[in-house]
Length: 412
Image 1 (spheres, rainbow, N blue to C red):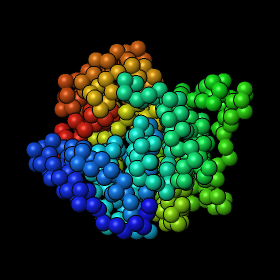
Image 2 (cartoon, rainbow, N blue to C red; image 1 turned 135 degrees about the vertical axis):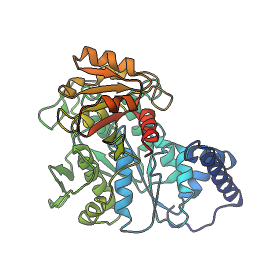
Image 3 (cartoon, helix red, strand yellow; image 1 turned 90 degrees about the vertical axis):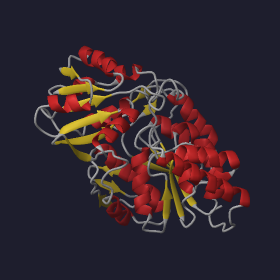
């Protein structure tokens, strides 16, 4: 429980020390941050280490298909108004990475932890969270992740009777169904642009009705709950009906939705929405996302989009035509090796943009763009793509490992 000041056991201290040493060696070898391998070693030495490291913290868990890294960052920044925070800010969101992050939080009061959807229930059992934020569920990594309703069912069963306050998106039927098994839920009207995973009722399988922003199942009566927090244009509406302006350096409607959910979470810990939203303005980029970098004398804005819902949101925030766009897709282990999701993305939204295509699976993407009647050029690498782009800031959209490749190439 939070507030437990018992020191770590000797075994836990050895595990933490060994994990940090392995992480340092990994960084020195140029193999990345070392957080995952360090966490794996630490958990091997003490399988209960995650629970021990979280014992003194008031923990918030954040899970979703899209937006969890950014929302975790916004919550962490806002909660600093109430005390020291430890967070897995770089997005290592499975148990090993989370363990590594918490190992540096001995002096923290709050833990704000992004959790992969598949691991949410287990991490919740280990960390005894005070709050859990559930943002959305959509198709992602079809070769690794479970089908969306199966994930929702896993959440629903695993969080049933949870003592945590659940802050959940009232506009996503899968999230609502998953959260409804919990006794203490705060509903947020955060919106849902991508609806293609929520046309059948998760409760009975019937067809969902979607008049306007509302939704309901005409067969079993499952319906959208009444939210107490809401995103309304450029404002967050709190449970008292007060409207608080959102001023973010991060672009797009999706990040305003993330801010609304974040404000609801931090209110659970006593941080007023005005204070929380003011602190969120400090966030300029999140692990490279939204950064504008200079490369070959050009401005490139780096945007991460990992699945159909993420690509749809990203298309809504890029500069209008004729802004040039570079698209990069890989299919490595961290991305999911199945690229069939490309056919779920509406690439006609890029009509009018000059498009260059790079990445391991550039030919898969080229076929998809051809079918969508888009004009594009297939390029060997980022350097060639930048040279071929017409003037203007270049919007660079990539999935996970492609994004990391691009960041390394531009020195970001």
